[in-house]
Image (cartoon, rainbow, N blue to C red; front, side):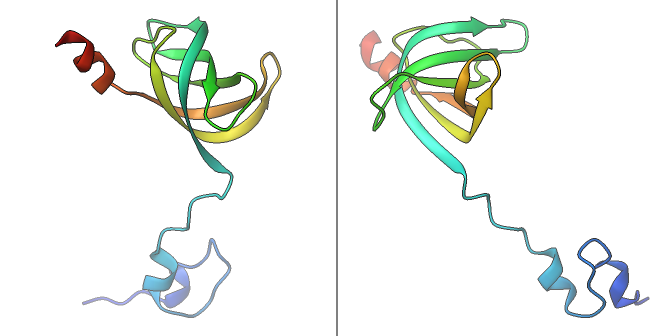
Length: 113
């Protein structure tokens, strides 16, 4: 089996020696990630073609409505969502969570019974 010089895999981190396994481990997620759960109060914008949306939601632990920027295939006011992402300062919408939006579909199935 051919061996490569140790520094071939470590150029990005500036390391010259060490175990390859140490350098190949995934780095921990950023500590700025936040998860919010809440009720959609208003759909400010939704693009049906690509799912991009801007939502205003009443989130647990927040007094005021929170702006959420993400993607959802179909979304409407009154839906329960969970959003995870990082806080950003959007030029148009102000402080916002930007990231993933997931809908709680169990509430939909409960209503159908």
